[in-house]
Image (tube, rainbow, N blue to C red; front, side, top):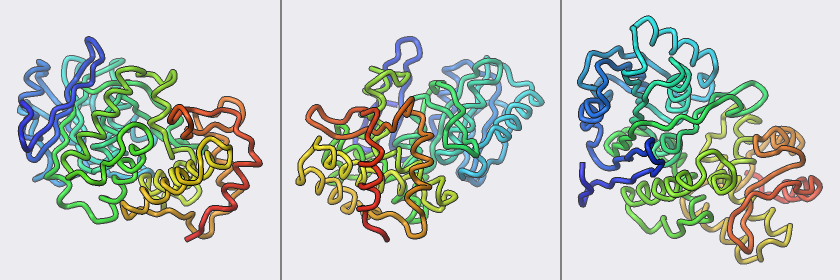
Length: 342
């Protein structure tokens, strides 16, 4: 499917494991061609969408229902999926297809990575959040009661089909949820996306992630920048029982990251204010939700995967965004206390 005025293609360059992200209206119709190119004879389609929005892989298939949502993003879900794969007789020469939001993409991707020690997976992300983030880059994970995304694996998809038609039925809050990931791109290498149409916003966000993943697939350094705003964002999700959605948490976390970088003297007041202005410009929340104690947020921040000793945050600075380790907890606590409250 060549790039046209209404479609975009982004290549994730990973040598023999390279793949293409297809973006545009109606691109899910290309799924049978993708499956045929893989040589798969059977497919399992795990879908959180109704039948009329679930793509046909063009080969004999088993369709398994899924539910989008963090509460089903568990090891129990992964075990159930793998059992159904086995009952169907899926082999590692076949293919798994995910069709849903970011949580479905994560759980299905992890199941595919584990089943037969690795079975090809194709993602058809159906939320804006999944299209610009979860479906690309090969990070798969599920949650534990102790924290978010603590159990996972790196398993790159064989292809990704970002069909913008699937976004038409999303509630307004779910669309805003995806904008949280787009907004944070402003501070990690893709400024000015708010001035672009949706197709180009998605393509630019995916292209940024593809470049970072190609340079640092396994979080040795550069890929940490993709977690901009995520440390506090994940804490907000967990502390509110996921009443704060992922993109909303990232938006608030991005504002906090700007304030923390300012408090540490890494950036000046104008750049701190820019964090607030960019996030607010997308219509995203910029304040902490009521009723969440700062000490509870700090408890979850301490469990963040990036923290190998002291607290760690991805922060803006003279060299751009980078992972900063051993951040003084007193400065973090003071910056939290100074955040606006909704």
